[in-house]
Structure formats: C-alpha cells, structure tokens
Length: 98
Image (cartoon, rainbow, N blue to C red; front, side):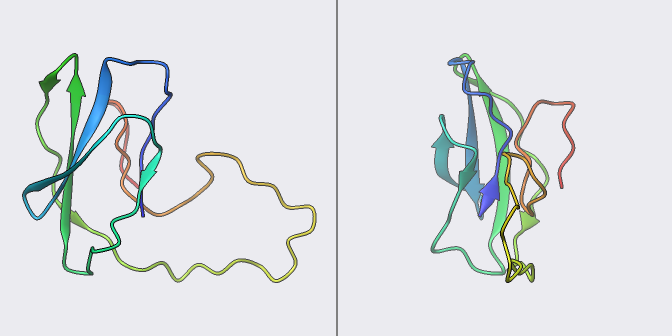
C-alpha cells in the first residue's frame, strides 16, 4: 500500500506512480494505492503532474510488508487520515517521505 498526501481540492494536480520504471497509475483522487502485483523487490517512484506538466520522478524506493499489528482491544480508539502509516509520501515539494 502506498500512501499519498492529497487534499482533493486542486483538480489541476495529480501524481504519476511508476513501478520498475513503467507508469503504473495516474493518481487523481485517492490517498493511497495498492499494487497487488508488487513484490518486495519492486521499485517505485512518483512524480507530480501539475496542469498537465510532469515534474521529475522521486528517488526509487522498495516497499516491504509491515510488521504492525492492530491491538486486540480497539474500543475507544479512533483513526484519522494521515495517522502513522508506512508508505511513500507523494505530497508537495516541501513534504518529506516517511
């Protein structure tokens, strides 16, 4: 699962997601993408597309399985978008990857 930073308010902005150098998906309206065919050796890059012009691709990363486990008792717990989650941040140029 790859996560993105996306407000949904800027229709002129999207993100191209590449796997092993090949365009996988243009992300226009989502905060994540699941590549069911991805492997532990797949390399991913992203680029911003602003008003039809594509920016430079990010450095390549690999994504592994998370060892995080949900607690047995979830009573009283809440979740908010952007709570800690492993993935690739595809935000603005000033964003940092996690």
